[in-house]
Image (cartoon, rainbow, N blue to C red):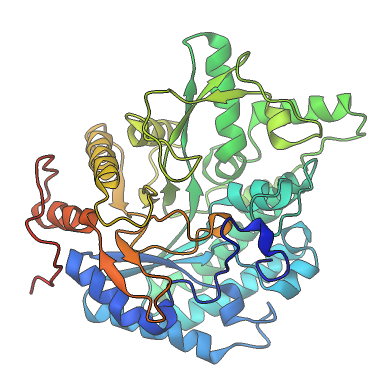
Length: 447
């Protein structure tokens, strides 16, 4: 996409080299050691391991890179957490329809088995997919992520069913054939931003629930709920809208009883990518939709408080108690699964003096403490991100890294931001000191 349609990227650049971790993985691990990290989550590229998409051709150079990274992490007692899919489908599979092809779950299981076989002896925590909503809605139901399919009426829903079934097949493959000898865990990383009611009215509370269902319930409900299947209220709205629009059936496909059983309970933990909050209304801030779509089906207005600080990313605001609100809700709804916050972070420009990011992380980790105090089984927290990277359609304009990357330097030099020193202080002292100021900007490893 970035080569054939570069105009969709904000700065007209691509991810061919990006931060070049392929050649800099030892420096990456050194940065983790500088901060005192005990775990590192990274994502595999399906296309790097299986260039044609299928396991008949394994790219051994790609496998060796991941082996090198995993071994370097373990050398310094840093636990690797692997995500199998993070939005880069092998092009050959996309040309066959990608997630819209009903054979996709089989293709994904095949890929997952290669991953478990090659890395499961050392990696004990796997996530199948990163952010299903962004894959399905932004990639298939709109035009804000690859493959820019923009099939608004049905793309999101065809992708959703396929993705959920693929997750289940990959989970069962691990649980049945690899976990008995490897002893690891398998889950999924879902983007769960908080959606609360604009007012305390019953209508706005329902609007918030429907928006939550459309954002993450579409994917979480089949896996984590007791009843399984797609969420009830959203399903009813899609069916009603489809009938009004003249469709002879709901645009949301159904699961068979066998598929519901296959998917339900396929998790050892729930990975939560959390960044921000929206306020939902049944009557205000409504958007006009010319075509059938996920958000037209949901029929909910959203807004933010004018008091919330803004970031370099137009979607990212700092809202109070955001992690607490999301995690306590999930905990009650899904009967206390184990949670890991697999992403949480703030975007800025290139600056090294990133006080806004520091403010965000301190507030987030205070919210984490409140969440644990409320009885949520939250077992891990991952900052996004270790370093600046290619932020998809935002290109290199928005920077999320604790370490800045100089993308103009062929060596892709990494430099610790002020936030890296503050994060290190929190890790080392197990304390959020809101008055702490680093007395130096030189990062060293604590031996």
